[in-house]
Amino acid sequence: MRALVPVMMAAALLGVEAQPAAAQMAAPMGAPGAMMPEGAMLTVNADGKTKIAPDVATINIGVVTQGATADAAVAANTAKMNAAMAALKKQGIADKDIQTSNLSVNPQYQYNQGEQPKVTGYEANNTVTVKVRDLKKVGKAVDAVVAVGSNQINGISFGLDDDTKALDAARADAVKNGRARAEIYAAAAGLKVQRIVAITEGGAYAPPMPMPMVAMARAEKMDAAPPVSPGELNLTASVSITFLLK
Image (cartoon, rainbow, N blue to C red; front, side, top):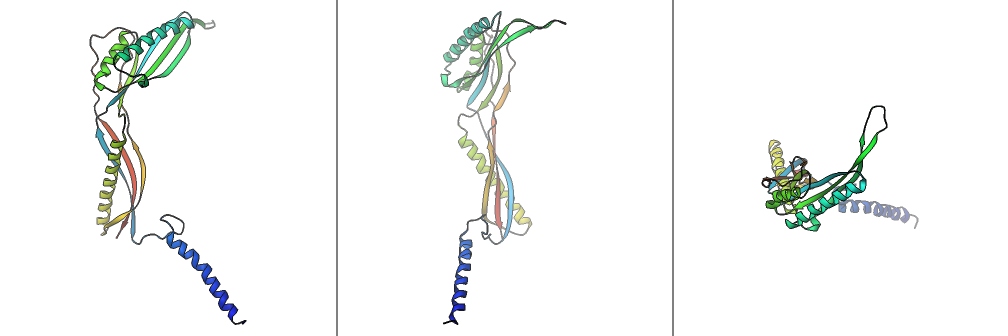
């Protein structure tokens, strides 16, 4: 009976050691102890892009007014901003596409040498961010608000209301470019690309296209609506791809 003990102990030890080995075989790629595929590994970074015409414009429209008191400045500002809002709605701009981005009331000072600054009045500033979905109405919208007293047009930027499909096209282009680059490296090394092992997205970006505009100091109707050219947007995506070469 004593002679069987070492044999049983050895069998037990073999059974304990076999369990981690089986788990190692089932470990996913990249996990500690995971088995790597046989062959040379190549990682490349690639960018993809797509061009598309914008379908929405964003304008910053403001009203700046002065008054002897804060109440007077605010009252004048409110009247002109309400008129600007009404003008925008006449152009078909929905309430959901008008958002206040700045509202402030500040004292104005007179500075004389050797004297304490003296308050001479107050300035009220109200700015809204307006989204115009019909690009043909951008110039008309600017003309309409200036006609009723808006005296700050800070700029226009163009973008997409939904950039999902355009960014997906840029992502697909990035993978295509990464594969082509890997083929070049593999051929130079006398190898061939067998398959993709891993893909990591570096990010996708759809920058708005800015169109600076000079701030308008006078609230008077223009002779004609200013021309606006939306141009074209460049959307980009980047990926890091690891390939198996053989």
